[in-house]
Image 1 (cartoon, rainbow, N blue to C red):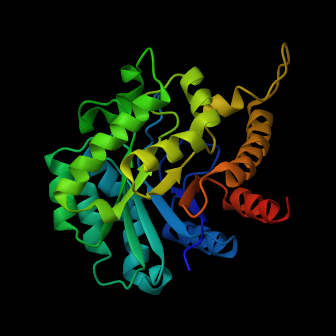
Image 2: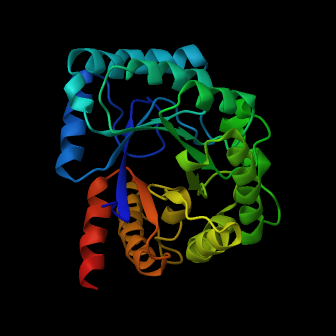
Image 3: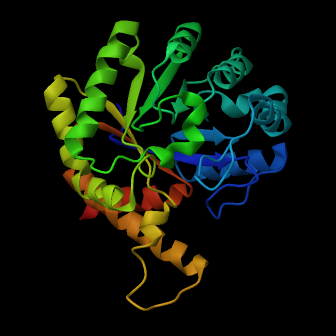
Amino acid sequence: MIKQFQIMGVINITPNSFSSQTPLSSSDELLKTIETYDALGCDVYDFGAESTAPFNKSITESEELDRFKKILKPLIDSKPDVFKAKRISIDTYKAPVFETLYSWFENIDYKEIIWNDVSGVLDEQAKQTLLNCPRAQYVFSHTHVPKRELTSHHMDYVLEDLAISDLVDVFQRAHETLKGWGVLSRVYLDPCFGFSKSEKQNLELLKELPYLIRFTEESLSTNFRWLIGISKKSFLQNLTSLEGEEIEKSEKQRRSEFLHHSLLVKWMHELPKGGEYLFRVHDPLIVQLSINSFKYL
């Protein structure tokens, strides 16, 4: 039986993550994180080696692979059973990077491997990678980036007026493209909070998320799997202080996680029933507590 609400735990091996999560520096630390996430009921393990926060510079393909080679590859080689029967996600917008990591897991009996592509660009690279990696699931993200190599500059492509219907239009076009490639059954959709969106647009999307999902699915007569990530987003932190109040960054983050939990419980009541929702978080405990709260409220 498929769980309606699932947990995607973020595992950063970046030196400059925007979150307060400490970047991992060794395979031993990575193993401990995976074991902790196991205990917290994590469903998907999302490995990332480049921060796409707008204040960070993009890195080269070789730099990104070097980070994965230093920490992830040794654990795959030495303890492959750690990944057995797991759902694995690779957070990269670089198609060759995903293909390389896909090959690393080739002889491991994992349950699912996901290309978490935040570029939102359905180009020839994406098509060929999905054809070259037939077991890969794919996250299509909503952004306005014209080329995949410009993904880290996504805030340069914020539309002045962005309505929920605009997101639906983008998902409809993606639906036709992905259907034409023959990969539609392998797709997750991600509204991609924080990417190519102003603070006002992100807040509007927070309110209208259930409507967006319902409208998209009804217009296409298709039930999708959805990835939703608002964990550690700055626009949430900006909601956590009273007028004139000055608080430390750590307190902002603590309050934003409380708000995060409240929003998850609210969405669990409002999202279309029967759907599959994957919540991407830096602390899986937040979703686990939200799921427990949902059961009793």
